[in-house]
Length: 178
Image (cartoon, one colour):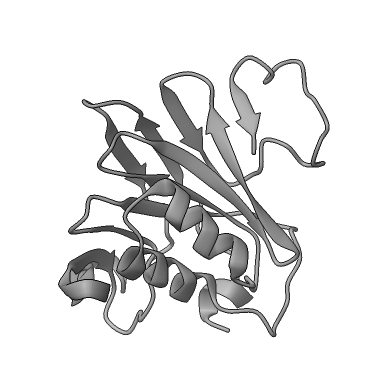
């Protein structure tokens, strides 16, 4: 486990637009305690197949909270609270680094995350160079892909659908659970 899996302290938001002129935006609301923000850095790391991964991070953080790879896949995490904890799981920052190192599309990232065993609950916004974007809602017990039926995709520190299969009228026109 990492400090991120043991102590939930990040309150973030992501927003993405799908399509050929799409974009990916996020804020990383992280309590730096006066230590981390002055040391924020962009690390460029090797990826599978000879590509590269750029990760916005802090010295000593091995995984990824936000990043993009040379194939155009971007992702950003939003911690979700009260979604369980499995100390035998893989730290989420390491799962997300593997996503950036190995995947080029939202579908590839979703498959990797679905087959991983996460330590804690998170949302992960994922957008790719082809203009696709979606959110993975991740728990230690499993993950699901949330797609927007419109152009815009958003996520923050909670799941939109707390109970799989439950329909909420206020969201029915906006999201589709895979």
